Image 1 (cartoon, rainbow, N blue to C red):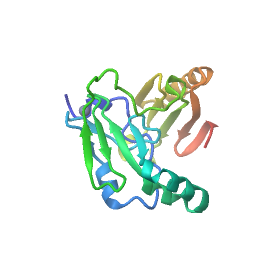
Image 2: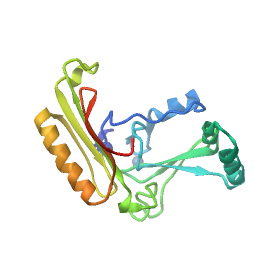
Image 3: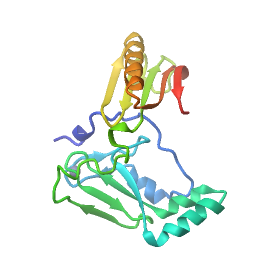
Length: 204
Ligand SMILES: [Zn+2]
């Protein structure tokens, strides 16, 4: 298996992770490339990642809510969280402690039963996202010039189309938009042509 096979449906650029100031460089460096023992490289490039969950120690539980209520700068609350990544291929768990000083890997005893344990508690009803991009000939991403891509992520279905024409992008975007919205599993969508939103819907 090549290193990227396990993440075929995730685009390399689909989103930018929301950054928060208290995240230190060590953490960012580690997160930029997490490799599972099976060889799968787990990306840290999109929001709403289905393979990532966060945990908080019971010893910190009440302190965390106190900080949440009192601190104006909610960035401090990030200090309480450790990260758990689940490999989509072998279902191993890769856990990073809240201070990011330790990485611990765990293998489930029952792989099938333990797949997708990092997704939303809403399961299939979780509302996902749809993103369409078209890059004109002035785009700073030269290798994407005059190409479109479409990405959608829900817990019922994921998909990624790349190198498509503007015409196909529009057609596929609106088709997918109606489909996901009618199923009630869409939280936001946009179709961005050359940096301008031709269509946007739902939360920002
Ligand atoms: Zn793995």
